[in-house]
Image (cartoon, rainbow, N blue to C red; front, side, top):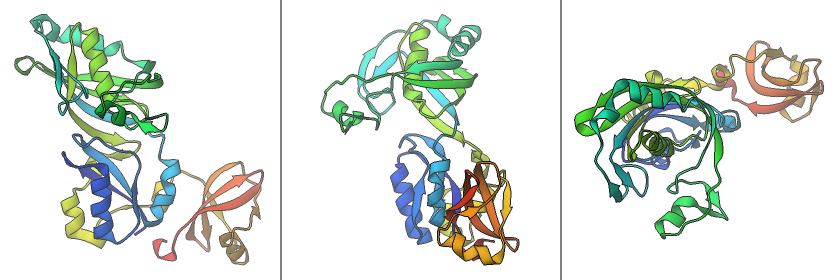
Length: 290
């Protein structure tokens, strides 16, 4: 099995937990394209077997989340798992649909965001959450992000909650976004729920649970490397040039620079890269995946 399986991650387990379980089930090398918070649910693409070699092509994907924001309470982790630092009354006027929608729209576009202290970003060789757990503070530099779309989904005035959907760039922290939205509403708040519904082209509709993976094992449907690069152009090489290509020899190829699907006698061989009219191998797959 060489490719990608889309897992619908449940709450209260880490991305590492899912990778570990998938390794036991498939007997293959397994990786993922980006950590999803333990409290979060949703899309977690798993790279299986030689699919792990595709990770470099999947790290800059934009994402879509369904987010729940609880107003009137601030926690040290900016989510529901942290300790409460502050509480305040939330005026009923803050829950007017028009006001909430207007505030959400102010977040559209490119902007700078300060990552939360409870994150895995490294500063001076240590992850931010390591400083946070010790009660230490360090300077965290803002990062540029982009919000492509943000839509109000639901208002639960009785629970002081707002639910919204956000389509954003890689590196956008929903905990920080929730705190910033609460601030612009004139109050405080924390992220109380998070569901990732899409990562790049990988959507929740095509995701399976870990239970389904365990039950179906090798029969589970997955995205092959060939399918993953289906939007890339095709290069056909003749039989006598195949072995040199597999051995790492660069082949003369008068094609524009870029990534290509490589075939020999109509059989998918793998992924190659053309640079300066030379084709070099990148990802080679087994013949069984043709």
